[in-house]
Image (cartoon, rainbow over the protein chains, first blue to last red):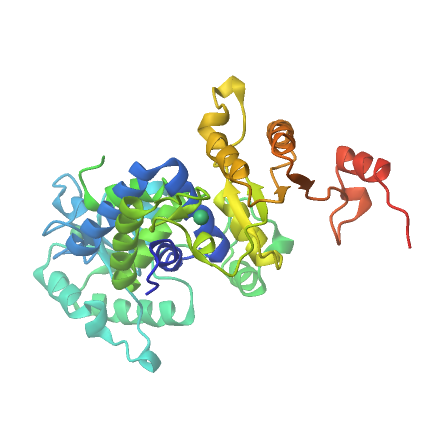
Amino acid sequence: MAADPFDALLDALRCLPGVGARSAQRMALHLLERDRDGGRRLANALAVAMRDIRRCDRCRNFTAAKVCRICADERRSSQILCIVESPADVLAIEAATGYQGRYFVLLGRLSPLDGIGPGDLGLDQLERQLAAGATEEIVIATNTTVEGEATAHYLREMAARHRVRVSRLAQGVPLGGELEHTDQSTLAHAFSSRQPMA
Amino acid sequence: MAADPFDALLDALRCLPGVGARSAQRMALHLLERDRDGGRRLANALAVAMRDIRRCDRCRNFTAAKVCRICADERRSSQILCIVESPADVLAIEAATGYQGRYFVLLGRLSPLDGIGPGDLGLDQLERQLAAGATEEIVIATNTTVEGEATAHYLREMAARHRVRVSRLAQGVPLGGELEHTDQSTLAHAFSSRQPMA
Ligand SMILES: [Zn+2]
Ligand SMILES: [Zn+2]
């Protein structure tokens, strides 16, 4: 770590994703010249977040409490459970849909080559939830990568053991997307999965 | 300030220039999921920088010491003084040129409409430096905006009073730039200031 406080700040800002030498410099000068209060507030918010934010006991999403806000919300249905890879996916689904069920956050995906197995994703914990019986449907919303698909397959088997219905986010051509700019595998999948029109 | 540590972190990250809601979320999740050490280091670097970084007694650049590294460097010439608007300009000149003189950082530019006068830019302090007699040349490197030009004019008058030579960064078509993409006033200036070729 650099001994000079200015250099140390430049170094440290570069741990933020997408921040290179030039943006780090712009950020440091902005805070020093125009927003020291903002800089102090950010220092404090970071320290508190790094210290206090943990995984929700129930869904593994980030929270500073024992259970997160979604899990603590009694109005949400426990019959339906959406399984995602990351907290960002929860935020995206909350922002885009009117989904009123609950989540389970894997914080990763199965990847035997990287030594990431079911235990690392809390799948034992998820299995206990399914065994408890409140869940009637799981919505698999893992990414459509090879590892995301392998994880989806594992989840489908687990759900079958507990007689829980399984659905998966629809895959196909993005809305508003142009066919000529859609990648080949998406287009091939969308074509072979074409739906009859009413 | 948001009560929830995660929301507070998102809020606080947005005080960084160029960081909107989506990047704040990406940064927060990155630190929480993959780099808590980096997050703690950044919290600490920010707190130290906001508390300790002040203006150099001699050149007004940011430093945590009484005088900055450049002013403390006895090998640099005190005969030539480059006057810039901001610490970012010092960093840019240091990175791009082999300049071995000293700097004076205005931390702004004359702007009567905004109530920014000579005292706000340390110009009284600069005048005392020129009166002390070590400076033989000032290089004016203020921006080529209306206010930067007004500041340059003020500096030229001050230098004349103390019989100090004045130079200004050359203005013209940027190297590697294409004429058709050069703005009209730059092109007009470059044309009327054309230089004889050897
Ligand atoms: Zn939760
Ligand atoms: Zn200095």
